[in-house]
Amino acid sequence: DSEMVRRYKAAGLVVFGKSASPEFGLTTTTESKLFGVTKNPWKDGATAGGSSGGAAAAVAAGILPAANASDGGGSIRVPASCCGLFGLKPSRGRVPFGPDAGEGWNGMSTIHAVTRSVRDSAALLDAVCAPERGAPYAAPPQARPYLDEVGAAPGRLRIALQTDAFNGAPVHADCVDAARATAKLLGE
Image (cartoon, rainbow, N blue to C red; front, top):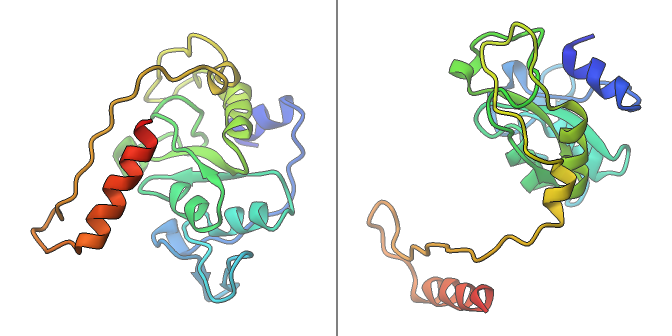
């Protein structure tokens, strides 16, 4: 077992099955010659995302409450967004990466999970976050449990709103108005 699996088992999780992913985990859809297209359980014809699309589809379908996933360039976050789940890419060194504790994606690839809620993700992080012996990176220890953070008031937030396209393309006035109305609603 990898260090992450050892920690999952120590926390009482039951590990079973293997989910689909694209070859080398390099695409934002989960399609392979061996298993075919991984479908979104919520919408026929929609993608489950990738590269952890099989994990996300399994959680979204209710097969299990959480599924292990990895993320270098969106492989937790993309499938989570496609399947209506929560996906967090932990900071480098926050969770164990072994047995492949090298420089995957120049050290930017991490392991965590796709879950149904922020609370579930926080509970998993509490179960597995600790330095890994021999790892090339280590994050400073968390000051308090992640589950405690879930219920904490965020304090005053300051969020920027950009209504111009990054490439200079025109943005339809209805889109700008909708973004501003949403920002105003969230600011109250």
